[in-house]
Length: 236
Ligand code: IPE
Ligand code: IPE
Ligand code: MG
Image (tube, rainbow, N blue to C red; front, side, top):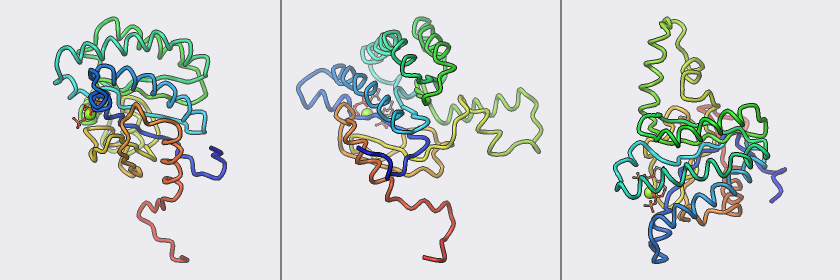
């Protein structure tokens, strides 16, 4: 699709959901859905950044997801570890900067090692930012932000929106457009601060089937949205 006549959001958020149901409906194990979701994410993430979007934030694993079975959590952690090491060069070759948001606690040494490698290696890349939210909770991010501000002895007079954004896990612009797949209509503790004025888009497709055509459709919808930010255009 030609994006020249479309409005391109600077920051896209994706709550990738429905991997398990995708697999279940095909008579497969939930883990097959996660594998397929990971494959799709690689293609989709690169496509989105190639279309002029500056930042893509992906909800890959919530802090609440640790409540799932040990088998599923272990499978996902191993999948992340394998994918991040496999893709180390490909993200770098595509000039994509990878960052992570979330708490490091509960993540294995091996996973943290590949995450750090990916961040270090791609740190100076300029072709867009892929923010992977892993062991992420928006409320924890706010708690951690308050603690950091407190530790730095910041005076109250200095605290404004800009400073708070600086103290989040990564300093990123607000999310313009949020996509959630799989027919669920909630935020599930995702980037509450950054989403405050985002346009929301919910679709029925399960994430493994949310391909580049589906993303194009979402952007067509975004292009039609009238973002007012509280203002009124009296000339209309
Ligand atoms: C999203 O798919 C991936 C993660 C939350 C890790 P789900 O695993 O939530 O799939 P459903 O919602 O159960 O179908
Ligand atoms: C949200 O999906 C978390 C991620 C996409 C990683 P869930 O499937 O865990 O959310 P709930 O439980 O349906 O709210
Ligand atoms: Mg789900």
